[in-house]
Image 1 (cartoon, helix red, strand yellow):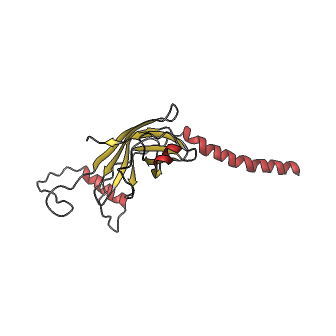
Image 2: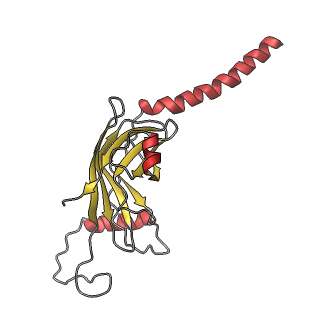
Image 3: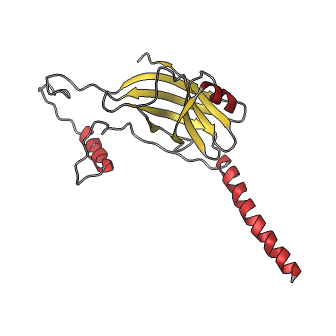
Length: 204
């Protein structure tokens, strides 16, 4: 009887440990690719009978149609002129944090207009995968550790959607972009910096 109790106890211990080991280590051998388009419907008012995804689809379809027109489109205030396009502000290139944690691609902060705020867009992006990676805006040019982030201050934009591919992240209106100096890909459970993009003013 004691033998069966020991075996049962051993199984109860091994299963959670195996699950934890898989959760921590599996990202190292798994690639998650995400390829989001630049949002077309950032200024759209979504009709009650449509979802944002349907609005995006309709606008994407319309974007592929060539329809010459001589009229000047009105701006948001209703006067003649063109509506302002998203403007690239801060931008930077991701780099390796060390010989194991590697990153590449471009991080750009776009101004969508006074009412729509800002987004962070990652393009041609790739980073070493890891458990529970997060996207941070940091008030330091090159944070290398958790203590660097804590000392400088940072804002988390959310979980990384994929370790490969282009993706968008909303920036809360409460964030002061004047203080933001870098984008950081950060492993939350182990408090490890995976990649950093130091931000500067876009020349485009």
